[in-house]
Image 1 (cartoon, rainbow, N blue to C red):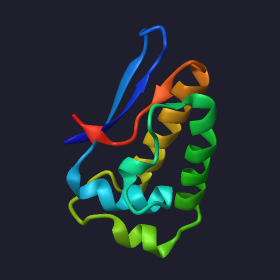
Image 2 (cartoon, one colour):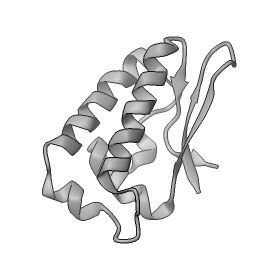
Image 3 (tube, rainbow, N blue to C red):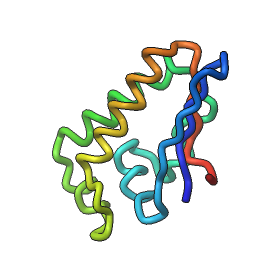
Length: 106
């Protein structure tokens, strides 16, 4: 299992967003990168929010490549990914000193 990590500078927030191996291809498509681990690298929230907004827009566009990348056993599908992105965005907005990592080993 892998995860995105959001950490506030104060240490008061430490959020893990789990990513199963079967979900890696769809996350890459959602972010428009060849490898989802390349998206964030302890990126400040202010820089990450526009990237997350673009990812949400890609999902909302109905891009067939993104839909095709969803693994048949992924019970969360695109709706679950969009929900996670909204939650990640909310945390980064609420805690402007927070940073987010790319997909790392759990």
